[in-house]
Each structure stands twice: as C-alpha cells, then as structure tokens.
Amino acid sequence: MIPRVARWSAASPIRLASLCALPALLSLAFGARRAHADQKPAIALSGPLAAAPCSNHGDIGIADAHVAFGESVTCVATDAEVRIEDTHVAEGSTFYVRAESHGDAGPPPWAETMCSSGALDCNVCANDVAAQFKHLSGENLPAGAELSAEENYEWSFDRNQPYPPSGSKPKNALEQALVDYHFQGFVRTNSSSVPFAGTYSHSDNGSIFFIDGPDLELEALHDAWTGHPSGASVLGRFVLFGDHTSDSPRAVRMIPVPNHLEETMAHLFIPPFDVGGVTKEIQMGGGVGMVKLTSGGYMLISTGPGGPTFTDDKKHNPDPRYTDFHYVRANPNAAGTALSPLGTILPASNGAMDLTPFHIGRWLQAYGDGAAAKKYQYSENLTVISECETGDVYVIHASMLDPHKLIIQPGYWRLSRVGWNGMQPYLHQVDVFEQDQDWESCYIRSAGTAWVNPSHKIELYCHDYRVGPLEEKILFRRRVVNY
Image (cartoon, rainbow, N blue to C red; front, side, top):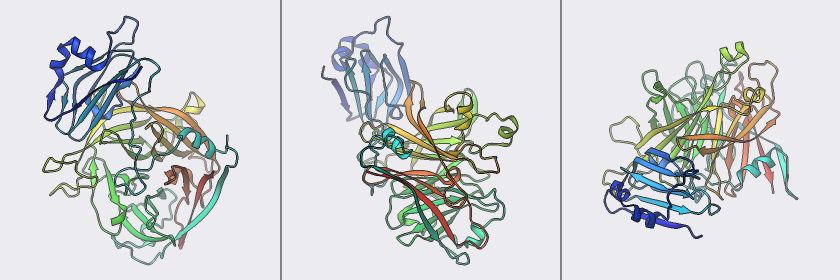
C-alpha cells in the first residue's frame, strides 16, 4: 500500500477544528479508517506540536496544538485513525498527516540528517549508531576494522600568560589544590582551526577554554557565571554548556567557535516548569546537549544531578537522576519573513537569544534493574547524536562506576535512543560498555564526550582530570574504529 499524504502548506493561519466535523473529508484526506474496539486508545498530543514525532500504532488525537512559523510536522497513523481539533497551522509552516497499513514505512524522521560539518546549527549524522557503538566497545568488529583505543594527545598553555577574552591566567583560573575542582567537559568541535574546547570548575570562578590547532595550544579563556559550569557539548558552530547566576534561572550558554576570542553573554534562560503540580528547574549536572529537528526547531536534552551526592553515598542507593527534555523553537525574525538564525541576540536583552524553550517531559533515569540501575546511573557529560538512516535521536552518557571510591574505577559509555510514549520523550536503553580510565589522560566521568566526524563515524574522547600545580601540558585520549 502506498502511503496517502495530506499536506497543508498554509498561506494563512488555519483553524482545523472545522475539518474534523466532516468525517467523509477526514477519511478521504487522511486515508484513515475508523478505530475498532480492540485498537489502542487515542494518544492525545498537545503543546508545541513540532516537538513530537507524532507516530504510534494506535489512534492519534491532536488537540490544542500549534505549528509555528517555519516549522514542519509529520504525523503517522498505522492502521488507525487521526483526529485533529483546535489546531493551528501558521503561515509559512507545513503539516503532514500520513495513514498507512501496518508494515509500511516506519515513523517519520525526527532529527535533521542532512547537515554538513560546517553547518551553523546542526551536527553531522552518524551511520548505524548502535552498530558503531558496539564496535567502539571492541565487539562485533567487521572484517578489516581495527579499534584504536589508546591514541594519546596533549595540549599546552603558559600558566603565567593572560588569555582573552577574560584576561585570566591559567595559574589562577585552572590550577587548584583541591581535587573537588576539575575539568567538567572536553569536546571536539566542528572546526579544524579551533578543534577542542571544554569547561572547568573552580572554587572561585569556573572557566570555558578553547584550544587552537594544529599545535593544540590554549587560545581563549572565558569566565563562567558560577564556579561549577556543566559539561560541554557541540551544536554546529557553537559550544554549549549549563551555567547560572545566583539571582536568575538556569541557562544554556552558547559560545560561537568562530568568535571564541570575543566576550559573549549569549544564553537561553530555561524557566522553571511544572512536574506533577510541583515547580522544578532544569537539571544539567549530568550533561546537556541539543539536536536540530526536522521540524525546524531543536530538542534540548539534559540530565542531573551529576555524580553521587552525600546521601547517595550514605544510603548506597542512588537518589533519582532525571533527564529533562525541552523543545526549543527558533522564532521568526522582526520582519516575519524567516526564522532567526541560532545565536541571534535579542535587542537590549543582555545576551538573551531569540529562542523559546518549552518543557516537554522529565524522565526518571535508570539503566536496567537492581545493581545495574545504580552501576550505570551517574553521568556528568552527554552527547546527542542523530542517526543518518532513520533520523532517530541517540544520547551517549559518560561516567564511572563508583566515583566516591578512592581507587579509580572503570568508566563507562551508555547509549540510549530517544523515544516518544505518546505523552513525552523518554530514553530507551540500548547498550553500555566499560573502559579503563586514569587520572592523567582519560577520566571519562568528568570529561568524556563523543563526536561524529565528516565521514559519519563516531569518535570518543576522554581527558585529564585536573590541572596540577605548575602543570602546563594536559593529556587526552581518542577512541575510534578504523574501518
């Protein structure tokens, strides 16, 4: 059966409730049949419609939704019925509804998969994420492939030199006698001239650093707003991380790599949100990342808290870890003719970007049952990856097994796929593998991340734990499969 497609390319805002009053028109336009008693109940979607893949194997009900300017939404109903009520499609947006028989094409692509390595606001997709992850563990390597797990590199700095744009010296910004302060994140950027960046916590003020290539020397130091910024991640030409001030909501800050020598206050405040009648704030201590969606907006994924808390250690039973999902809408420009590019600063806003976040779900973090749930629950960094073949969104968390033990424990990489349960996103656990780590060159928990190279291959990076007294050379390691 060839899928039947109904498409709106709105020339003006449309109120769709009137269409739903015409069953014959619905049957013709959507190719949908009436639900039978043994089918799953309708799944109602509301709020920012473009945040959802809008697909399931039962009926789909769409109510009180809005497709904003510049967004594209696709809904699929398999052997079921679609009902649309009080839903608006703004001018300049598109809305597709497809009805197909069971066994036809699967869910519509969720993440953008056509990005080049130089794209402004998205990353290169990865081929067959689950298979690549398995190969990175050393298992199921195809014929001729070789795992290179011990590629060691170093970058350097002058501890007495002030670095732009903050003017800070590494001996003040990075050196710390206390082991509680350390590298919080280390990322491979999409730039060949400034290939690495990261975050660092400190008792006074945290830092964000950028490393020049090809000699791998420190080139820029930015001040964090707090002593403990989150881990870092990359989206297009931006390095992003969680930060906050004492009197404002928590924020995602974004520094454009091409302008890494310039001071920037670019940020997206994430307002508090309701979870079961209780006001909550975004958690980013376990990592934060973004991915561009086919809808034209973005999904922001964050996990927290980070490492074990004092009560975790006392109870030998971890406190809950949560993953928050936000749909981030790119807003129309002042003329209303296009979406504002990522990084656009609102006038007279002290750095606020022209984006609107919507909280679309909080998922209780877990991995398996019993001991496994505790063993693989912690993380301080995450990476969001899109899959080329499907448009699926994957998340790789990085941590270690028991961060409170004085003897260093193995680290781990945990792979999850983002799913949609009809009401909100969640993480479907896919795979996990452990890796030996050390303090000097590969501490996965505090600075482990993934990167997809222009050949659509996943690379894993881990990094030195901290800057010691008088130290001017820092080690890191790359793990990659050579096919």
